[in-house]
Image (tube, rainbow, N blue to C red):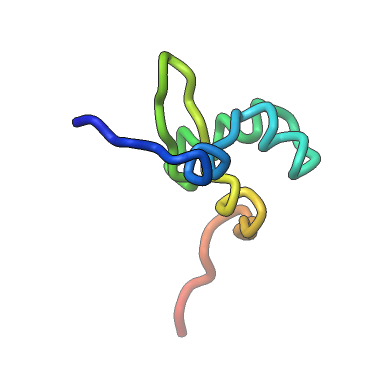
Length: 70
């Protein structure tokens, strides 16, 4: 499937390294989020890109198990 990108949509996608700089975390932390499918990705020419909006709006979930419902 071929997708046509405009200049505006091309700016919407950033590298994992750039995402890490924006969030102030390691590139490996971004890679873990990608692996857990917490971030939308796009693969172009072997590079895995993430959506800038997702990085800027990302909210971490509390770690560990969810509490039992009463």
